[in-house]
Length: 237
Ligand code: SF4
Ligand code: SF4
Image (cartoon, rainbow, N blue to C red; front, side, top):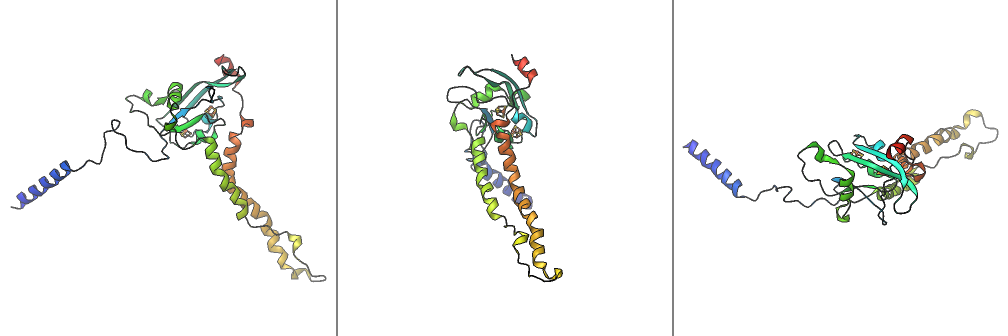
């Protein structure tokens, strides 16, 4: 009797699950709504005139902790303005080891590389997970795909935090400001000692948290953009 009861219980549990609404979807046929700030893949952008924004500076390649970006750069005349400038002759990003840290987007001085919300279609080989230049430019075709930020927007988000920090820092008290009684013995003026010791430490502590944002801002500065190496210029010509 006991066996029959437990069998019936199991059948009831199976039947209940079989008839309940599934909690999974058949991706990629069905795509669930994503979180507003999801970042799933990458794209390369062009400016309003249709010229490529990427200047081949390789900052994204250098900053990438997973070393999955490869840029081959050269200097050549722009098809739009006719002026010589840097271009990426080849740009590949391997999604297999990307950790979605977005550092490559943050350091780009021209907002050329961005992240997009849309995931790549499932791949059947390793090559399917490599984003070539063609794929990257195609990913940027519709703005609806773009994720919430590019390098400029991310830089703006860091500014308020930097501006607040000096206000939080304690004001250093100059050692000379404390009154010293005339004719008093040297041991009777301990009040001057603590401010003198505290003064140098306060600014140093306040400056430290801003280092990360300042480093990224300096890295994005157009002045720090170096032209492509001479050997690559030759190779790309
Ligand atoms: S940092 Fe930006 S401009 Fe420089 S190579 Fe990368 S995508 Fe191009
Ligand atoms: S998101 Fe991070 S790991 Fe991925 S390509 Fe950019 S820098 Fe590299």
